[in-house]
Image (tube, rainbow, N blue to C red; front, side, top):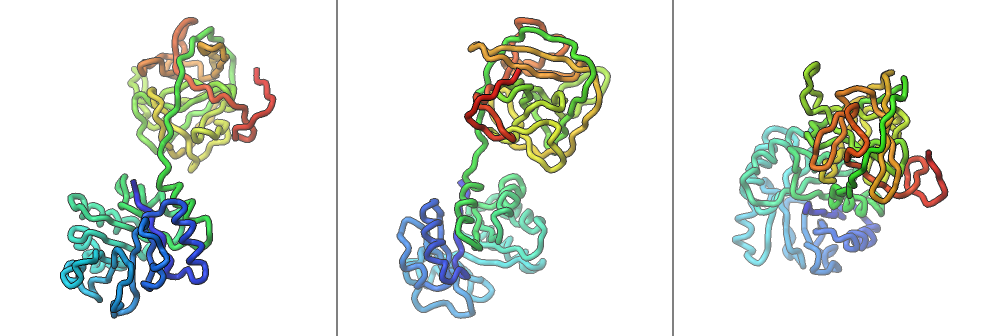
Length: 367
């Protein structure tokens, strides 16, 4: 689990309220410049002292961890020899190639390294994380906005060990905790029985091109009704007449629903570059995929009707072509135009009605 640290060094009169919020949301550490600011904190949180200035305080108070600037205060190892009862870490602000080297040395050597990057580029963090690949220390990166958290966590696919936030207002600590602890939510897919297919004439269909290599058993859920969707597979499987498009799902007619996240639907026609769509595997696992573009073109359409074992009707309208595929049980890849009544396909039943994509409880009949 990634750690969350709260930086109250510049919080002023808001420090106490921000600390209470962080404690309520299970933050791992609270960082202060003055030992007195750590005194009220319970031992259930790591109390981190990150002093400013060239001189360390004579008394560290209740600090569990003291983070120092090695270039000013000396290395954590030497300080630990003088204060064996205390843990020490390093703070490095990366502003140039020289400070980047210091950061790389620290993450290979020290138990704790807190980093701040001056420039709006992820390259220095990538280099630091690569340098720390075989090290056991904890890397914490400082940031000013919760919106930057997913970027930090995604660098080299795993990010640092934790994030330190100096919140501008109450509520930001809670939002950071949500970002850090949020995990992909698996969906409970069901098996549907095909009841019939019909040539539906001409209409517009949407191909959703993502910024992700999709797996052979991954696609997106698509349905004509909000309460029933079918798992349309990515174009990762070879065809005799065209190359694979491992980033694409030939999804369906433009009015179809898909999932942007496990609880929020979008119409295919609404998706555009930069949006997020939920990629779903045949076992129900999910992950977010960023939309690179949506290709909407006029094509012959095929209407596929199916029903769940409980009798819930499901419909999906897709391009009427052999290369448009749907997943069946066991990740079987089924050509849509070859489907026959009685065939089994994978789907999802969200259960609740939708209003502007959000689940609601009201009367809504779709047919």
